[in-house]
Amino acid sequence: MKENLTEAIAKLKKEKNAVILAHYYQEPDIQEIADYVGDSLGLSQKAAETNADIIVFAGVHFMAETAKILNPAKRVVLPDLNAGCSLADSCPPEAFAQLIKEHPQHVVITYINCSAEIKAMSDLVCTSSNALQIVNSIPKEVPILFAPDKNLGKYIQKKTGRALLLWDGACIVHEAFSIEKLLALYSEYPGSKIIAHPESEAHILDVATYIGSTAGMIDYVRSYPSETFIVATEAGILHKMQQEVPNTTLIPAPAEEDNSCACSECAFMKLNTLQKLYNCLLYETPQIEVSESIRQRALMPIERMLELSK
Ligand code: 13P
Ligand code: SF4
Image (cartoon, rainbow, N blue to C red; front, side, top):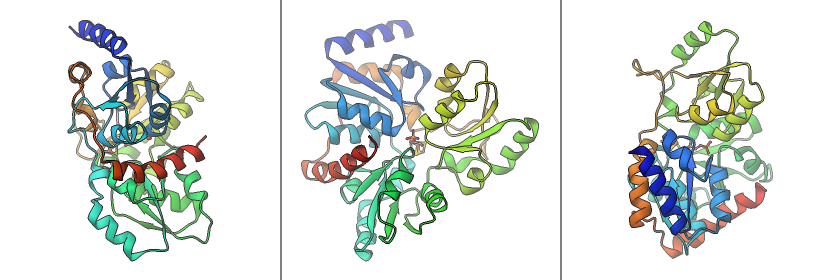
């Protein structure tokens, strides 16, 4: 059945000149049929350069929306339209517009995990892999408003020594890691390395030997193929990571409320299934739509980011 679906997707993809872009948090069977699997920056770069007529975005809404902003003439479909993001949801446009109004001197930098409306109010967009570089591109004396992730924001403050005005948003998955359980696990594997995504809270980042985007974490592990790693990000990353380092022990960091599988999953990411992916490619729905006025304003900060990340 799964084989039939995989074959049917491959056939349809060819017929329709479609491309499948997938995030590392997607289910393994989706990652396996994707043309490209990557982090938010890599996925935006691929979306910007594709010649396909249809982009099937196996990820969450803000990622597919970014692909649509970059490709207004192409169809961008998302297997499940409810695949949102708690971080993006934590930043409603009206409240954000008010904060910007109260701080007219601030340059507005937004993490890509936000809606098109929020991007349309931004001067620059960044991802977890280029956040430090994007913030450092702004002269030191210019104040910065950073949204929506306060944990990434605090991490940038620590690394750059700059005070940022932070939006109070967070990712429910990365805030669920338990420092007590993590340290207990580490004591069982004393020689291991803890690696973490910067959406995690400061107490988790403080004990990590490497902090970076999902792609950055995979690169890091690849350069230490015989170590043991405790991985503090969404558990979907373990699929590609383990393929890269088959002889390495990878242990998912434990979450607070998790007594069953000791791993953290993003329920939004996991809404996409192979069957839904097939359906959305076949029927070309649900499509991502962005109004032209918002798209044009949201495009500028994304293009600036892509330019600075070359
Ligand atoms: P990356 O860009 O590092 O893949 O992060 C995306 C994300 O949503 C993390 O929760
Ligand atoms: Fe959003 Fe967190 Fe899921 Fe990433 S893991 S998509 S930040 S809810």
